[in-house]
Length: 157
Picture 1 (cartoon, rainbow, N blue to C red):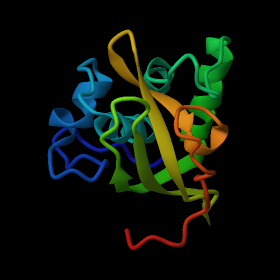
Picture 2: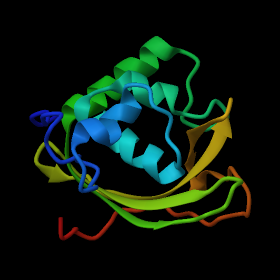
Picture 3: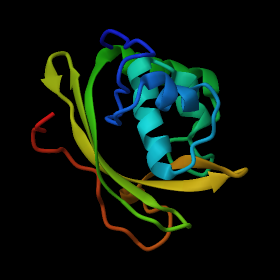
Picture 4: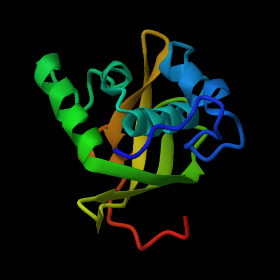
């Protein structure tokens, strides 16, 4: 995990807004209005090592949800510490109300090696709030979407 940005710095999610007015507000409790906003805030939560937010914003029906929260929290924390988050690029979004998709590229490094990936992520409301359901290639959600998580070519970020 790299140096944590100041709350007054531009948000690492790529929006041209201060971190404290963008993703940090969501991480600190403001509900995400859209799946894209939730996706961006989850990326920033990983960058900041805010693993609890990742747990709280994962849909309980998703394949990555774990009932052993202590172990899950430790796994996410370890991932955050071992990863440098270089950039996020939103490639496309859908406007569907049921299981909308956010297609993104996350540029990451681990041990000095490229660990970047692209994913088409599904989102679903739970108790009125948007939650990350999982990659569209996990056979979840609607529409029979094809496998969509893959290694990305190097980004221009």
